[in-house]
Image 1 (cartoon, rainbow, N blue to C red):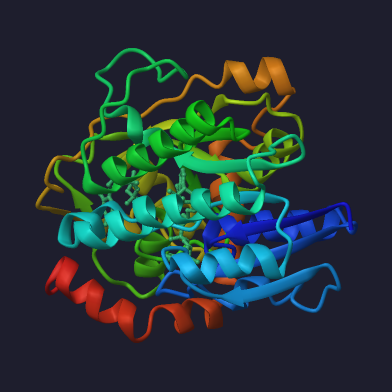
Image 2 (spheres, rainbow, N blue to C red):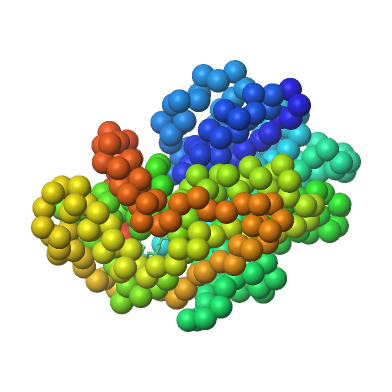
Length: 351
Ligand code: NAD
Ligand code: TYD
């Protein structure tokens, strides 16, 4: 085995696509998926690779310092691709402590274990932190986030991710640890938990429930198909320059209401019914506190330096995503029961 890679958060949305890609493409690597299986972690996402000989799943908490130290020893971890996080902005507004614990303390605990285990000899080791464009704050009508845009996080989620990015940089600067960071725009695609906008809207159209659009629906996000993100992560892990940050984005800016309209129209077409039917479910609800107006990424650095580019335009990606959710009814049923339902009620009241 040439590498023993610890992938954290591999049972989540993006992590599961990363794990699948690494397990299938690199039979020489040992892939250790560490995940606490919170409400967002689902091993069903990895049913197709869980018997692979180069794959191990470990259930555990990244913030458990002694457990993480032991894990590094036991599996002789050579590299880290760190995705585990609390990832939903609305939850961070309700419970910021959970975000500080997992995203900040959890990242620090991994950095600390890596430093001890690699004995400050970093030549053959990389700590790769997967982060978000939300650390840059909010844009007005013009401009794009570049890698040098000053950090200006607004939500407890983005503040915790910004803090974890700073810890990674500090370990690089102070101890010489090799690291890369990527800051990516909003992802969508199969296996995304239906608390996030796109799967929530698809699920609610399927179940003929209201589609909650925050505020005036004119906030803008830049959407990237999740497999394109996994492709970028693979490239950065193998070819990213030491101590560099890469912005990853889809070149797919849309207002929330424009996106919801697109999903409504695709589903009306699938159900072979008059256009406008699903749009009747749209309900404008109270805005998210501190709601960032616009995110948009300039990804020219990764395109130029690593030859990456997004493979899907947004409409094609949305159609693929809708098809996936419509053909995975059992998956959706499983994740929309239990814990998720009670959160959903707290979040949206009677919606
Ligand atoms: P997700 O919420 O779907 O998955 C997170 C995973 O982390 C889950 O499997 C969960 O069980 C696990 N986890 C949570 N707390 C843990 C802990 N204490 N110990 C171990 N595992 C724990 O998130 P996602 O959307 O797949 O995002 C993955 C990463 O990518 C996050 O770091 C997020 O900040 C970043 N990111 C996400 C997006 C996006 O649009 N979803 C965009 C850019 C960056
Ligand atoms: P989300 O998927 O939560 O991602 P993020 O907040 O990380 O960008 O939300 C995407 C956008 O959709 C964001 O502007 C908030 C908005 N939104 C709604 O209008 N209604 C909803 O029910 C949700 C979950 C989000």
